[in-house]
Amino acid sequence: MSHGGDDGLPEEHEEHVNHEAWVIPYADLLTLLMAMFIALFAMSSVDIDKFKSLSIGFNEALGGDELSTGVFEQPSGGDGPFDANSGGEAPGGGIGPDRQPQTEDVINNAIREAQAAVNEQIEQAAERQDLKEVAEDIKEGAAGNGFGEGSIEVIPQEDGLLVRVTDEEILFASGYADLHDEGRQLLNIIATAIAPLENRIIVKGHTDSDPITGTFASNTYLSTARASVVMDYLIGTGIPGARLQAVGSGEFDPIAPNDTDAHKAMNRRVEVFIQSRFIESALEDAHLGSKPVTDTAAPDDVDLDEDITSDIGPDFDH
Image (cartoon, rainbow, N blue to C red; front, side, top):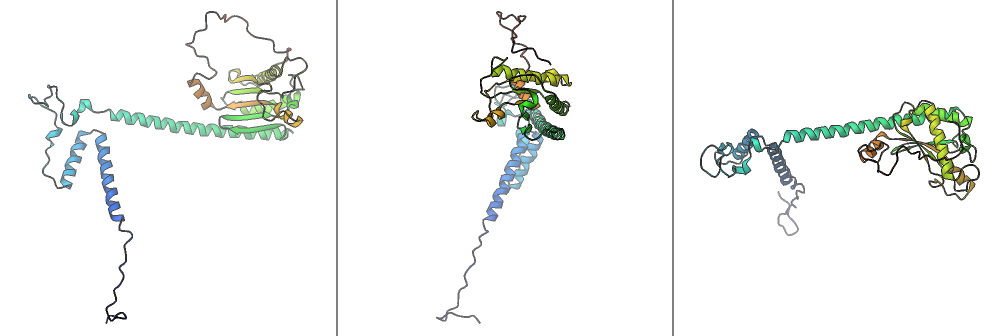
């Protein structure tokens, strides 16, 4: 017995709205899209046999009449507009074996490029691991020989590894480029760690902004001489000289303002930078690396035999 309302009429039940009804047309749409992309992929290979099968299959699925495959045949003799010897084109743009895109070559090239990119990523990861191990070796060797944190910093960077000797007195006396025994000990630790690498190594000398007094003409000369001394010492430990470069920046590349004694001491430093092989390779490709461009001739007015070296300071031991 049904229960009525206050007016005695049967009570109507509220219909429940199906909020998920959209899923059905959405699924149909995805199915159609998938079929379309499969068709596009199949046609992109321009395989006539696959195209025949696909066309016939779609025709049967859609309930069409019998589909003649004659449209796929190569034109035969005759005088019609689609004759092979006439100036017209075959149906569908004249797709034939002699006009098919070389999709296999394109795919193979894409595979090779992808493989090369993967190999480069693997090599970069291996190099980062090598530089990480070098950094740990330098830190442990320095700490084990009494060089505190205020003496040396090892800083991983995107383009390599930076080893910074922050206490200049470990290497040189103020205003001089003669290497201390303590400095040789520290450089031996660095050389042992970086010797197995094949990376390019740039030695950079830096000073504060105080005017120089003594033997050297300027801070730039002093910083260049110090970088050269360190480079020569590393060569003496067995590191190939072709991998090394010395650069003197003087007071022009500070890491702190030259406003206090502490800040000036930070700027008086020597850095050994181990450059990533991939950065060097990119620079070489752009003709910006260390190797000369062999097909560039020297100007006629330049005498390559002329001694263009200049004296940057007094003779010093190498």
